[in-house]
Length: 190
Ligand code: SAM
Figure 1 (cartoon, rainbow, N blue to C red):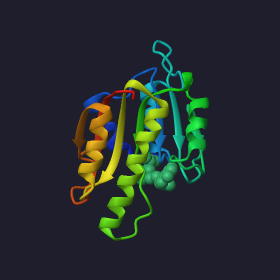
Figure 2 (cartoon, rainbow, N blue to C red; figure 1 turned 90 degrees about the vertical axis):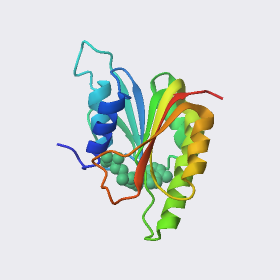
Figure 3 (spheres, rainbow, N blue to C red; figure 1 turned 30 degrees about the horizontal axis):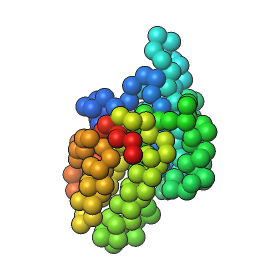
């Protein structure tokens, strides 16, 4: 049972692109209420449930409170863009590094489509700073965005530091919504 239907989007992306593997370390940005983390815990074997596979790690961060989840470490009431959060992630992640950064973050919708788009794109761009600090070379980033005029700028920013960048629209994402995901793979450490 998932805490939120958004789980199905990540399941779909991972079924197709196999980004979450046993033993991987994952940072889940904007993790509340915790459905993506539930998926990640299972797929990276973060509880060690399958002893034949390496055990992974999941660290979730949100401005809101996140209820505890077996196998995940949550940083509640923390801003993913803050250097203090980056430092804490380095402290918690095995070896201080992550294989995957996930972001389903969203700002509180203002109702003005263009403004919401711009705010979400700037949140996504701030993830590049996080990637510099914690993402392993060769690592991957999945981030949700709302389509609009600045999407190209975000695409460019990702292309500068990842070898491969794709746009993904899961079936589970409502057709009429402007929601899309960037899947950026093969991080080139600067
Ligand atoms: N992926 C989650 C799940 O499956 O349960 C749902 C995430 S929800 C759509 C978006 C979340 O992003 C909200 O809980 C919000 O508080 C969080 N968020 C927005 N800005 C943030 C920030 N700067 N730092 C951390 N979390 C943020």
